[in-house]
Image (cartoon, rainbow, N blue to C red; front, top):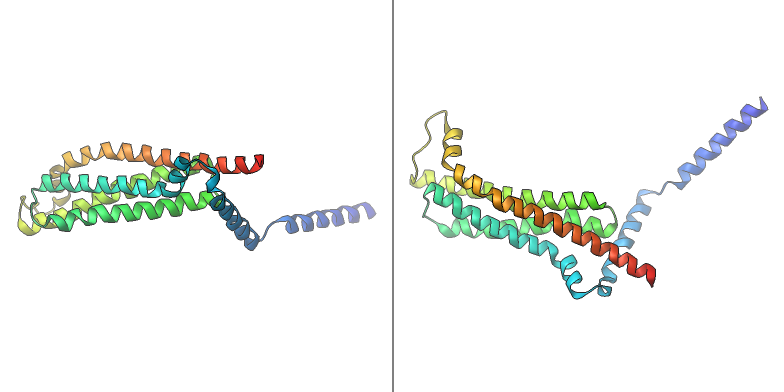
Length: 212
């Protein structure tokens, strides 16, 4: 009986110690903010090139997304034979992909990386995902819908027969969709590579601090 009581008490003490060892949500947030502050304050230890990649990498990715948006807009305007209102399509398809890609990459990749939340694999996957979704798929969809409305409004292409609209637009824009596979591959590779470089740069900061 005494042995059973001792085992029960021992298990209770172990459970109590385990619960106490678990950090609270406030402690986790504080640790993440301290890690991010440590990274930002010690960027000066890196080379100029590494500082630029880590600080302005999201803007570079946003620039390539903007170029993808312009390319997609040109292709879909050509397929739909749209010549009206070029500024209504080219301006938003250069500005919106730039902003959405840059902000999303910083929010999903750079900021969690600063806090120490991402592994290398997760970092690369997020970079590739942001590049594909916001750098190619989103601007391509915008170009299709914006120019499709203009094509219907000004009747630059034959209107789809009733009940076969999806097939009609798929056939009409098939060549543009195939060509967009090229920037899709390039953008995914660039986004993944950028995330990988930022991960290595963040690790380099910690290595330099350990040597100091």
